[in-house]
Amino acid sequence: MKKSRFPLYITIAILVFFYLPIIIVFAQSFNASRFGGAWKGFTFDWYWKLFSDKNIWHALTNTLIIAVSSTFVSVILGTIAAFALYKYKTKLQVSHNVLIYFPLVIPDILMGISLLLFFVSLKIGLGLLTIFLAHVTFSISYVAMVVLGRFQDFDYSIMEAALDLGATWWTAVRKIMIPYLMPGIAAGGLLAFTLSLDDFVITFFVSGPDSTTLPLYIYSMMRHGSPSVINALSVLMVAFTFIVVFISKKLLEAKE
Amino acid sequence: MDDFLILDGISKSFGKHKVLDNISLTVKKGEIFSFLGPSGCGKTTLLRICAGFEEPDSGRVILNGVDITKLSPNKRQVNTVFQNYALFPNLSVFENIAFGLRVSGIKESQLNDEVGKFLELIQLTSHAHKKPDKLSGGQKQRVAIARALINKPNVLLLDEPLAALDLKLRQRMLVDLDNIHDEVGITFLYVTHDQSEAMSLSDNIAVINEGKVEQVGTPAQIYEAPRTSFVAAFIGDTNFFEGDVIEVDEPYSKLRVDGFTEVLAYNDKKIKKGDKVHISIRPEKFTLSIEKPDLSEKYNSIKGKVEEIIYLGYHTKYWVRVNEFLVETKRLHDRYMLDEKMITWGDEIWLSWHADYCYRLWQSLKAKLKKRRTSYK
Ligand SMILES: Nc1ncnc2c1ncn2[C@@H]1O[C@H](COP(=O)(O)OP(=O)(O)OP(=O)(O)O)[C@@H](O)[C@H]1O
Ligand SMILES: [Mg+2]
Image 1: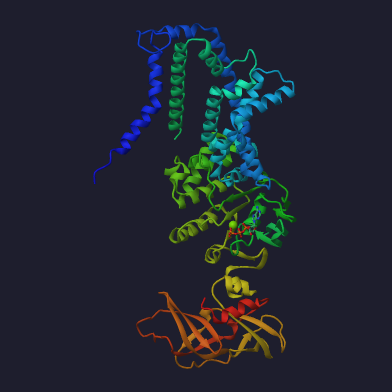
Image 2 (image 1 turned 180 degrees about the horizontal axis):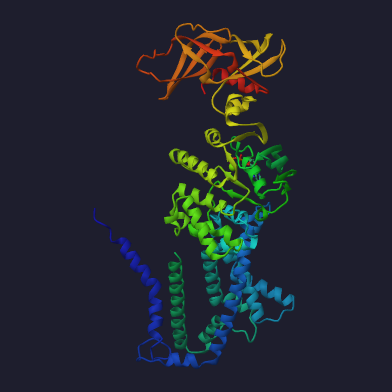
């Protein structure tokens, strides 16, 4: 029987669909033309502009502060939530699960508006703190879901075995449970980090005057600034993501 | 030897379901003591109470004279071999075994020596740096045992440690377990639903059914002199009869078993004319012969017809119809196919057995008796 070429064509089509835009952005970031389009010669100008723009650095700092802190907090809270969902099977189990699932399925815009109303009614000034709280709110759910997946085939009797051998509960958690959950915690943390990095909709609602994050700034640049600088920024972000994914993959392989 | 571990009136319920009902047992120092019972009878729950993972609703656990009922698991001088091994997946064999010593904060050099000794005991020295998922079932089991033994517990609890292994490996591990027990001299509390495991390993067995202790005794006592119909049926095969005492002539009495015959039985406790009694006779206690045997008056003998035969190699099971009863019997072969007379379907044969082989049951289950009359089990 002759092998059909069809799957190959599909694969190529999908790859083109995914990566062509990125390639175009990559090429345009070196295009001397101010608004993209026709090739006007090679230049590093946009990258220089990018690095000399103070606002971008400010936005980037904000973004990183929020991403790191919200990831840190949501990893801890999400893991604890996953443990509770795994360990305590009560009558309220279903409603607890729904509570954790909810932020995953609710539209961002709803979440953004409701958080905004919430903060305003509590008279919390919009700024980095509110963005941080908002990001923690949805990140917890992602972390909890990923860690819960890891818990699914966790045999609680290994915790009992550790206690049985004289370990305190905390030692058992540290030496047995957390190492076991680590792949899930790391994956959940990575997910939370990237979600926080590029969240636009929710951040848009809860940000204040001085707390512009990178996605928000890019949006305003789209409207008022130069698209070519955005291209350069995009290329750097893709490169950064690629490096992070590559490193985390290497780390996981090394652990095997 | 002293009573070492005492379970005193332990009861435990999960919701409305009473899993353990007033269990009292004493275990002697250094012995292998088994909890034997069918699935769901509460063996694991009882073991978990000994380990400290469950607290009984009432009753006490006393180890070496100290009440440990409320002590947390990590403070008890008791270690467990879990049913599913429960090895730490992220640690190597060495680290698994070393875990108990590490949390007790022992010096590194001493730790290496000690772990090395136990690796040798379980013959896994060359596998020390493997992760548990790279081991076979029997190897995992041995690691679990070494890990539990390294803290030198007063009692080692084993929860069906061999259930997941195949028959051959199980038999080898039984021998290994026995050797390890001889080596370390620690009291073993062994949970199993497998009567042959319990019989071959234990010094004493407690047969448990539906959360109650049916009988405690040595393997021989449990097998040869079951006190209840449950024990008789659970440990090995047996035949049940229900009869009325029609004549007492100490130490024997004559019973009339409806639908069977008159049976001469040994009186293991006081009995009087007119009493209703239940007896059990093991299949191998019957002698089968083609001619009417010439035996003393202490023997019962009756004629029957062979209805079913199962050849099992070293022995054959015969179900013999005697009036309304189908009696299970067993015959060992030493000269099968030589000069041993063959017995086949439909043969009229004689069953005979000594009066001493009729065991009086202290309590019986009517329903079970009726079923046994016709079933082939
Ligand atoms: N944590 C629990 N919550 C509710 N019911 C339980 C719990 N643990 C055990 N049971 C019930 O208690 C009964 C006895 O359980 P246990 O595990 O002690 O049985 P077992 O004798 O060890 O059985 P097996 O041979 O199958 O392991 C079972 O009916 C079980 O459903
Ligand atoms: Mg069990």
